[in-house]
Amino acid sequence: MPRNQFQKMIFAFLTVVITVHAYVFFSLYVVNGQTLMNLTGESSVLHALRAQGGVYMFGKMCPIWAVVLVEFCFAYILEILVGSPVSFRLACKKFDPMKDHPMIFESAIINATVGIMCPAMSLIAAFLYYPYYSGFHVLTLLANWLKLVCFNFPFAFFTQMYFIQPFVRTLFRTIFARDRKERA
Image 1 (tube, rainbow, N blue to C red):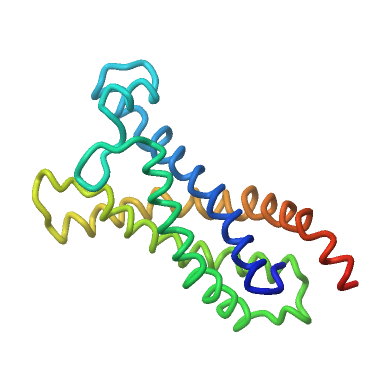
Image 2: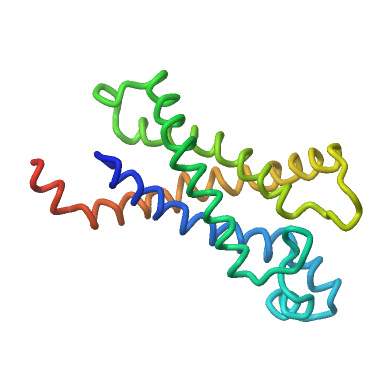
């Protein structure tokens, strides 16, 4: 686990890089892929995105790399300022990192992080991908946010718990192996 602010920023960076790419893939291919292909008449999602000129964001079409970059910036800032510190405090309210098994404590942190980041990033996404061409309505925004949370929460829970966080923790331990040996 990260010991200082630099390591916390690296850990968050690794997590967010993997997570944002996973969510962009999930959103474009799994959730919206068939709709995109039906709208454009293309046989693949990538061809459909090219045919429509990118991904609808900020009321205009943007390339996929811009979507990844914008979502990365929001997710990284949110993870550093809110997600990591609050999830650690929430986990500490129920579990003692010195007494409880590390796997239980880490699972509590992951669950708390998903519980914070999924609704927050879904709200940001509801603003980013809102259909501004039809005017702005708060109820439409809230409905879009709830829809995104319902799609994203199961994906977030299972990918973070069983794939992303175990991989990031292994990668992090590998990167900072020398630091761990010096402390031991």
